[in-house]
Image 1 (cartoon, rainbow, N blue to C red):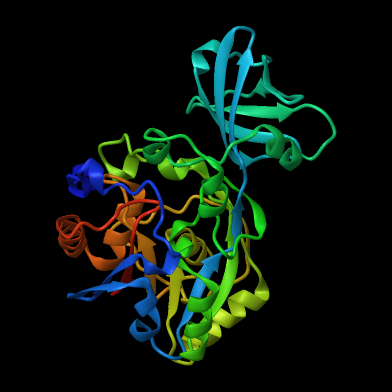
Image 2 (cartoon, rainbow, N blue to C red):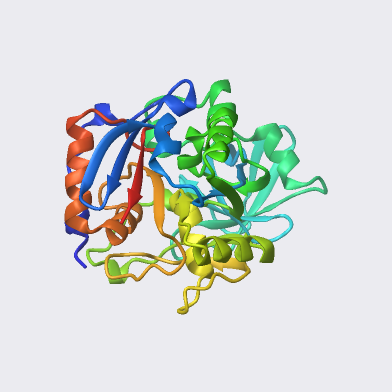
Length: 341
């Protein structure tokens, strides 16, 4: 499909630079087929049904934004995928000043050697020493805010809390599964009282989620792989919910992409552990989910293509036009949509 089909005009002032406070006061655009309602996240128990199951990503964001030097050259690195005990694939700023074998000094006694330059310009960084890389990152790294926020303000201490979900447990993501940022313990308790359950899986979100689609045709775009895991018990529970007539609602496109990676042609979800580079565009037949809760996405992005695959391109174009006209807040710290085909 032509990528231009997924373009739309988004005023810069619609980009949220801070989350709603409290988190569950964010606005929610409810799109159920052709029916659309303006609600808030706190209305969620009334919008779902007893027996439904919300599926959250329990990945935890690590301080994966690094700034260092190679000689006199300033080098920025955004880690996006672990490839070994001490090895991380990274996107590099000022990459023209870096060669394979160069050592980058990130300060605080943290250094890494650049190896294996990829076709996309990324490098594999091999961290020196014996300390776990996660401890090194706590010393010298910053929270990797999305570029559309970081270009407008620097990360600060608030982001260390704001950019983690209440489910964050498994360290390894370099971007938050942002739909889950809207949940609070109180909201989760009210959902439980309404007979709506929840489960977790793990997908370590990579920085590739922010990359623009440069190809003119979706068939030519290559997704970056991300590591994920669904265990047997979780797979069994998701299958049981659907068998009993309930709906599996993915909270975030990361949860959706992992469930769909684990689901077979027979619509059965099986245990999964490994990399997924699934790319969902209109025409895809969904096999493991019945709905999606997700924030509002970038024009021409793989994520807007995904929601268009779920709901229909024209319907999502109309929904986004409504959201812009009614001053919904977009992107990671913005408002959210609940999409039920």
